[in-house]
Image (cartoon, rainbow, N blue to C red):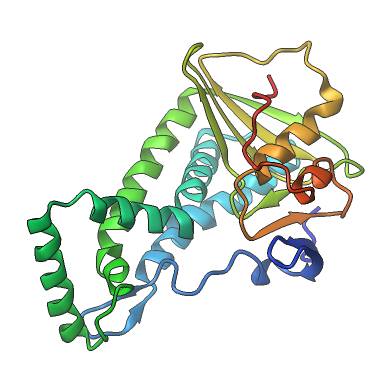
Amino acid sequence: MFSDDLLVYDLGKRQWEKRTPDGVGWFPHLCSLIDMDGKRSDEFDQYIKVNVEDPAAPALKKMAMSDALNDGERAAVALFIALTAARSPKLLARVVAEHVSGLSDGERTELEGLVKLWSGWVGRPYGPNLHAEFLKPSSFGAIWIWAKSLQRRLLTWDWHLVRTSRDAPFVTSDCPVFAQWDQDQDVRLVSFPVSSELALIVIGGGQVNDARDRSREAWVVNRQSTCRATDFVVSCRQDFPGFNELTSGEATRFLSGPPT
């Protein structure tokens, strides 16, 4: 269950590759900062490792083995899921783009001046990409606050474990956290694959429908785990439920509703 040998489907190349966890989900300088000496600092990344990833790893393994979690382990898993949803290159870029687009002309001119001043201070050439670097501390702060807020909500909702077999495994991706809000029913659902054989479904304001077709649960959860993927999908086998839809050019947005 905890093998380092992974099967990775590269969505850009449209082909399967064998990799290890160290070679998957890595983006250069995603959470690094340029300090006032102009050097790269991984201080935020180390903070996440110590406060999120290290506590979550044993808790997720315990959950994968179907063992009950204590309150601390449950909180660690909730924060890991929340930060996984928040910490992505696309979301970081969107946070910056939405912030800049919402500025007035005067504020945008002021920002340009600050970025130019900062570029000279840290010895980096001025350019459009430098705005994102300059705004990273604020972006990280916003993402951390949002992740902590989602963690608190997840801990108040109902948790359900969904199981499958390795013949029809769950998969993960570069965007594995699925969140859906049914505004008419005021029901919130979050799904997250824990292992090839177990997925976590968190529901707020609703309950699990025990009469649902359980034979389709792997397909449904996998469509949720891959519907927003842009770079890769990880599986223990190539013919997983939902793979045909992933590769057929079908629209990636999940439309058939939650599996409850």
